[in-house]
Amino acid sequence: MKRLESFIIAGILVCLAITSLHSAEKTKLKPEQINKKIGEYPLTICVITTNKLGSKDDPFVYRYQGREIHFCCKSCDDTFEKNPTKGLAMLDAAVIAQQKESYPFKECLISQEPLVKGELVKTIDNNNNLFLTCCKICAEDLRKDPETYQTMLQEAYKNNS
Image (cartoon, rainbow, N blue to C red; front, side, top):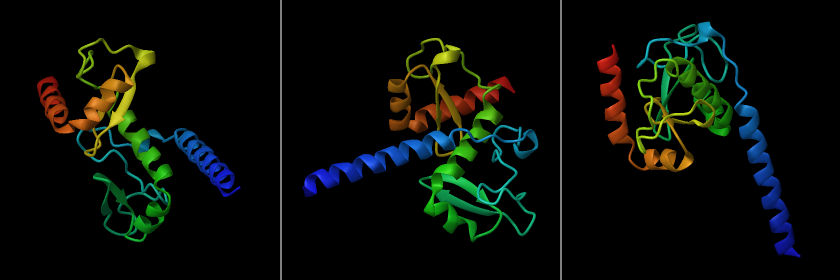
């Protein structure tokens, strides 16, 4: 009986996690909330309060699992830690909006296969860089060795500017 209860609870938790990830992907940002210059932190607002960064105090810079996140104040990091999914989705949407149009490669960095519009896998690294890969396997390879691909991406941006 306890085993059945454990499976039911695990199933409910999985469903909740999938639901929260799905709803987080629908984050919409206004153009004025996104920095357009590549290499800058992509948001001009706090991922918790949506207040303009710097409107209350100096923005608080925080690292979450290696990723840099800016808040309007120090107290926002506690709120973020309790449920990072929504804030990360907002940050990811801004990174994609900021970098997708100027992405310097037409082929997957890992497999060298052409990047096909409807089949792209978007991966964002710890430095808030957007990488487009042709498939999930290549995205996983990217996550295993991000430094190699970060260098390639930065060189391509330098050569295109």
